[in-house]
Image (cartoon, rainbow, N blue to C red; front, side, top):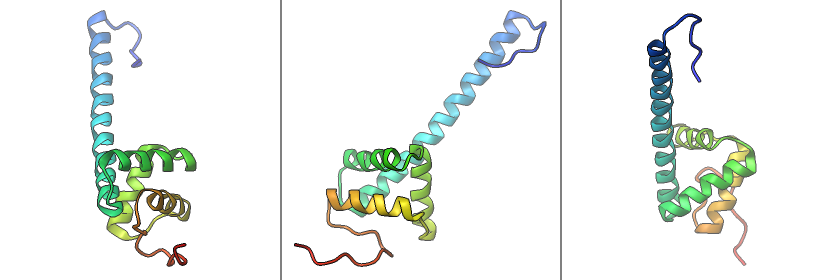
Length: 114
């Protein structure tokens, strides 16, 4: 709940509360857009469905203990710069291998497929 200065009216308090709610909704929309874009990267890179892309992001987040939005942001930065933390790269590569044959560009070649 928003901090309301002492002595404010109920109407003023309601305005503060509504402004906080609007700010939270704006953040949610921005976060959703970042996650959706990262899912798109997974779909293109891994030749998978959007639902599978969502699962990949979720699993990377859970196994690296990094918030989903932050994982999505790292994937988008990687798309622009080619840079990705090793921990994210390794987990992402494992999951993409599970869902499809694609390897993350720039990673060492995989050994022979058995």
